Length: 134
Ligand code: THU
Image (cartoon, rainbow, N blue to C red; front, side, top):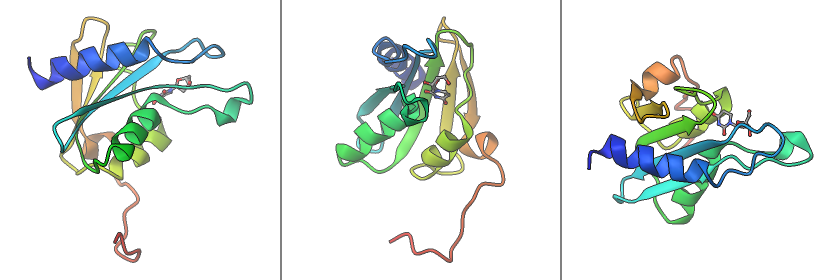
């Protein structure tokens, strides 16, 4: 199966587990990491609205907790929106573990991907050599 199809299936499965009772806008994300594994995430909302978080955050958390540190490719899907663009904060969070040429796939319901690079998704991003990245 092509990587894009694998990420589509994984993101869609994750979306089915979203906890989005307030927005009723389920989102799923799936990351292919450098360890070859796929990490999934869905948005998880909260009655105190700002405390909820995005699908991409859940997937990044799963990846990091499993010991992986690099996003090779990432896919996102939202059932109510074809090609759901990650929010601004998630773009920065994805960038932390990505490269300028990392591919981001935004899916519609049929699994058709609109694919772009990290650089295209977040141009003129915050990066600096003045902070030691360790
Ligand atoms: N959402 C995501 O999960 N990812 C995004 O990049 C865009 C927005 C979620 C947050 C909230 O639970 C719902 O979609 C509506 O904004």
